[in-house]
Length: 202
Image (cartoon, rainbow, N blue to C red; front, side, top):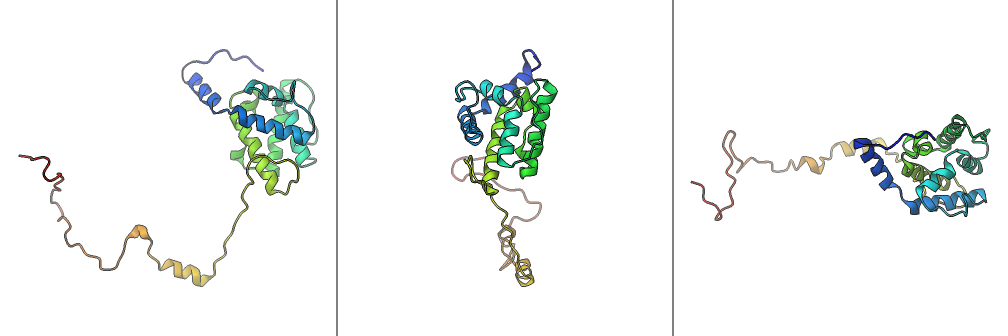
């Protein structure tokens, strides 16, 4: 990973905010889920202690590719094992493309640099949770993570119901029954706003 040196000003503030969004507990749940699916321990003792360890385990993208292949076989044709940075980045890109093919939306993904350069690791955690939810929707029978993604609930109304809905006046429009302007301030008159009995204006 390239060394960028310390950041200052707005860059540092943004970096601190993204660091604060990272939850070690959520990341640990993700790693337990990944280990259960792959059937092997990741890291030194299989326990995730901080975000640096989380990033180091996933940084080369091979674990992510193995994960998506275990969920949906054949999603990533060939996983790169070279230590070259461009090959590791390619692994992450292939994983993200496989996630889209599996059903995740663009907003459920992260950028390659979010993981590779430890920029926004909380987005990687969110992505794994979204993937876990999608597996449940797609009928995955293995270990689960997160909340099941809701299925589409289309409603089909016939023409009579649609026409009846057009004649209803919504509450935001008020009532058209007994409409009157009685008691309203005439156009051009000044409004008198004063709490009676508290202040006297002279």
